[in-house]
Amino acid sequence: GDQVEQSPSALSLHEGTGSALRCNFTTTMRAVQWFRKNSRGSLINLFYLASGTKENGRLKSAFDSKERYSTLHIRDAQLEDSGTYFCAAPGGYKVVFGSGTRLLVSP
Amino acid sequence: EAAVTQSPRSKVAVTGGKVTLSCHQTNNHDYMYWYRQDTGHGLRLIHYSYVADSTEKGDIPDGYKASRPSQENFSLILELASLSQTAVYFCASSRDWGVEQYFGPGTRLTVL
Image (cartoon, rainbow over all chains, first blue to last red; front, top):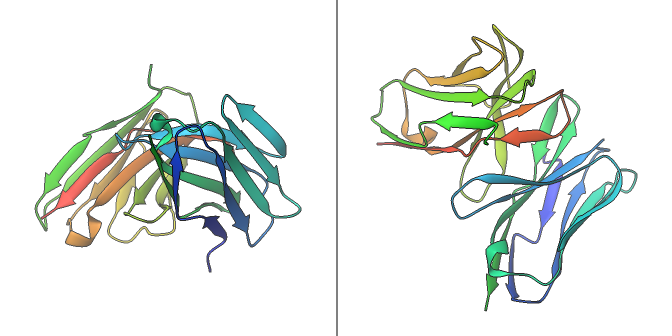
């Protein structure tokens, strides 16, 4: 069965606001990677974490292997943040992906 | 400078035809991967390779072959393209298994 549950599946934000995305894992993962698929279809690496938190500009991610989840926080959302966000985690012999969160930032 | 490149960026193929997607990385990574992404879904692993001249099956290898002639190059081959293989294909590389992956820009394949 699915090993990663990503939520929400879709999210709408006004410019300047923020929210959080979440991935729950059914098994213990040793790391998580977050990336964004932009309007051109390219996958942009955002974070790779084996534990704790990382912050980059208006984005912040946390990963708790024991509690089996990871979050991606977006603050002061901008129009260019729109896209689909994915989490991915190596589990056993393969990397499992969340189904993505489609984020739309509007004026 | 992009470290993982793919060609072509988009392709239209006919059912039953042969399609080859190419991937090139300059990261000096041992691992390379081919994924497909369908609208509304995450990425699914087709084939991967951890050394030149060797490939391994991923989760959905049926209908696909892979070739790793060198550390830098990894190809995905559809011998008999089918409608169900219409998707966006991503190549990626990583230093080791389970560590951060770096993705190419993707190839949009449409099979008619």
